[in-house]
Structures are given as structure tokens and as C-alpha cells.
Image (cartoon, rainbow, N blue to C red; front, side):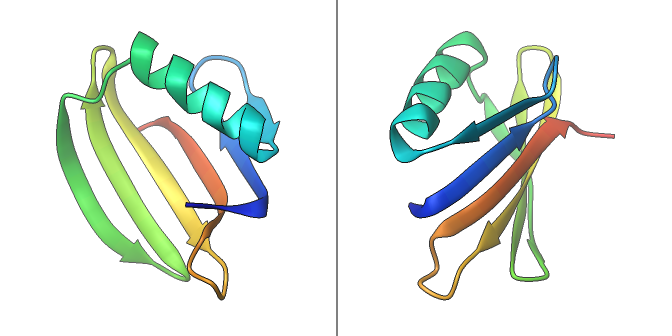
Length: 82
């Protein structure tokens, strides 16, 4: 799902920048273990990507995904929904 040069910018808690497929995989395993997604709240197109919002134990999280020409995730920015 992620491009080789993908990056995640997570502002859930302290700001974290995650790069590299192994680090991204580790991030998501831990993130979804600690804060499982209960339900999809919103899904909509956004420029060259999509915005996904989901319900987690501490509230709604919003993730903005940017895709590359091969339709892989190149950039993901997430944090508490405003």
C-alpha cells in the first residue's frame, strides 16, 4: 500500500515522522493494537488522495492520504479530528 519513499506524519500525541516500509509497518501494528479502529466515521476524496476518519477509543482520528502515480500511499498525515 505504501510507496518506497512514503512518510507518515502523526500528530496523535507528540509529532512523529515515520519513514521506511519496515518502520511504517511497525508503526501501524503498534498503533492499531494500542488504539483499535471501531468504526469508519468519514471517507471522502481529497486532491490526489483521500481523507479517512475513524472512531478510536480516545475519539475520532482523521487521516489524509496522498497517492503517487502508481496509486500507492506516498504521504499520510493523521491526528485527532477537529
